[in-house]
Image 1 (cartoon, rainbow, N blue to C red):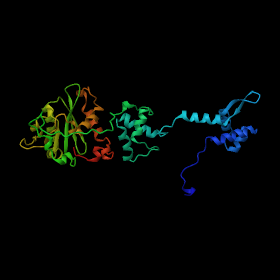
Image 2 (spheres, rainbow, N blue to C red):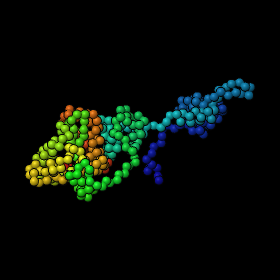
Image 3 (cartoon, rainbow, N blue to C red):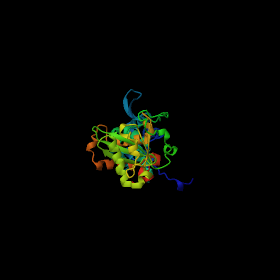
Image 4 (spheres, helix red, strand yellow):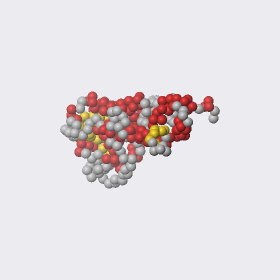
Amino acid sequence: MGREHCNTSRKKYQQISEKERYQIEGLLRSGLRPSAIALQFGKDRRTIEREIEKGTVDQLDSELRKRRVYCADAGQRVCVQRGKNKGRGLKIGHDHALADYLEQKIGVEKWSPDAAIGSIKANGLQFAVTLCTKTVYNMIDRGEFLTLTNQSLPVKRSPKKQSYKKVRGVALNNLKGRSIEERPEEVELREEIGHWEMDLVLGSTRACLLVLTERHSRRELIWKIPSKEQKYVIAVLDRLERRLGRKFREIFKSITMDNGSEFLDMKGIERSVFNPQENRTTCYYAHPYSAYERGSNENANKLIRRFVPKGTDIGKLSNKAIARIQHWINNYPRRIFGYLSSNQFAAIPL
């Protein structure tokens, strides 16, 4: 390959090599001054003087008189020791723009490191340095960011994936409900938009959040209700159906829930507010103690907990604050969608 294709530039400054140290030692013994030696090596005079100072040691001559002389071995030994002590430079280097971007996304906007790194590529952003998710976690552990600590992170997950056994049998807590075992396969495979999971997020008082998560797109809907009573859950769905009209049954084809007392009125949840003789959706109940059967819902609740920690008085949350949380979740980049958000992946007209 010719020199015209070379894309690297020669370093302007280079450290003195071990071979050059032995040459310096010989030239000093022959009587040359540091300035003359510097000319021979093409280096600055102060570079040679500093090297001589670094490698100068006390020696005894044949008459046992102490004298100061330059020794190449001593200079090399000091150079190696200093190299061990200095450590490697920061991976992010001087890319302050990337550091500011990560601190904003992770520290202020509460994104995970993986979402922050993935969004760079997904949005076509350009930075001088390229980092992977693992490197960002390591940098936060070592305290290399100005504002980011492990307190800024969501819960770290174990790389080992848990395996679950499918439960068979009737849901003991809800003998009248329709079991998840009757749910069609396309719902299980997430191939179709319109199948939701429903749950509550509790606080320190009676007020709580009613949460609906769409299985295909992970789209999130959140409402504040006065308490975990069946009538309030049904009232939210009634209000939503009145707003959507006939589109409700197209958007909410099925809802999967746990066996909590707030969800046991299956007929009330399913019946249409326009015609009680018709169903607006179909309900399915997960097996007891099987939260993994509503995995999207549970993961969405973890995202909500970043803003509403356990013990929060949800009754004091404004509707505007809840809308902000919903907006954040629906615009959060997700690895499963190539770092597109739920809104970008599958728009649902709500």
